[in-house]
Image 1 (cartoon, rainbow, N blue to C red):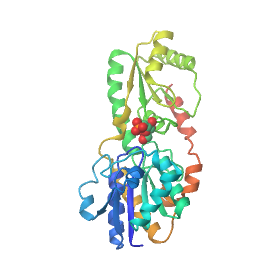
Image 2: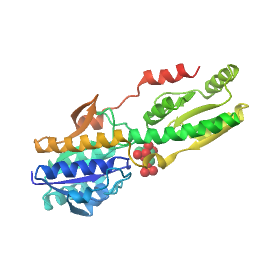
Image 3: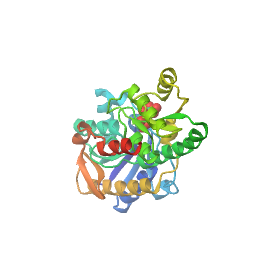
Image 4: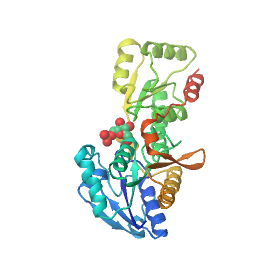
Length: 320
Ligand code: F6P
């Protein structure tokens, strides 16, 4: 293998830069040239490639965002786009493609492999942590700590003013961020898209808590379960509680990656190169326990990652 390319695609995540750095340096150490592709699959279609060296990735391990930038490409999702992307890889003599991103990005890599047999290797990078085949995706740890910092700060003012605060975190289709940040932040309730909930039951739960002496409360909701503003309105219209809503939004995607995310990114980046060099393709690297693994991307894009119901049960247990 003489030349590979690396891209970041889909929603950015803290630690993507650390992963790019690891891919580039691990590849160079094996005598493999690396090209960076800017703006994901869209950039590939625009032939926005450039040669990278060790210095290209100097001083980025601590940076949020992605130096390669990112995009969501509609063109790439058409059969013409896919064929064109495959052709561009051939023209530039790219023998392996490392894609750092979420589930959509893994689907793209899988499609590219099916189209032309391109050697692809995925690295899970999304704050959502919803990708099967790995316990953690790059960016999740940083995002939950960002959300936790906000929850802790809001708790201070919730206590002072005896209010109910609803904090909305990201997660269109799943509640991994909500569950982890909510549990760590001591939330009284956590609403996630995977589990149906009953708004009246939440008011009853609040009532019971207040009868026991609680005077403030934190409810963490995943954006895919309900919007914080809607729940605030419901509480105001259907109870006596003074409620306030806070949506954390895209700040969860930014910031300097935690030590956990930097180490994860470095291990996964280097592992991706080891697998490619050994001739493996159409895989996504990951961690299970503390072990580095590689799973078929076909499995990764079809399977579903499930929420840990024991953790959810703990939230209820701790709220009494
Ligand atoms: O990165 C994943 C994610 O953060 C989701 O949780 C969220 O719904 C989505 O991206 C929003 O992304 P964008 O605003 O970039 O489309």
